[in-house]
Image: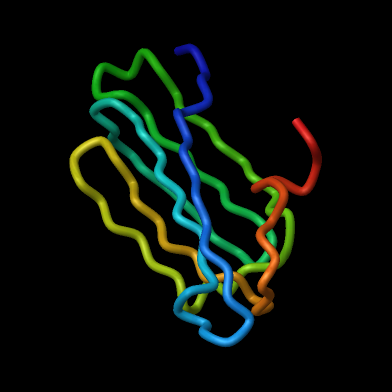
Amino acid sequence: MSTQTPSVLWAQRSSADEASKNILYVTIEVLDPIDVKYDLTSSNLKFEANSSDKKIHYNLNIDFFDEVDPENSHVNVTGSHYFMVIRKKTAKEEYWPRLTKEKL
């Protein structure tokens, strides 16, 4: 079984006044996933899954640029896409310069 990093897209909104507009949109795409596991903490997102034919193991580990609020975040699953709406912990007008703690 080979290990691959799944496709990830992200976008963000920022607002110093409205918490509901201080969020990250993260989309993870995996084809025909089974055995899906994900864990969202205040500083990290871990995602693992296998392809239905068990030939590919998907593994993703993101250390966020800044803290997030896992309690007020949620995930929607549609087929092979995992849509995550993740609330940033600190309300700021400035956008994050990147999703990850370290420059990749």
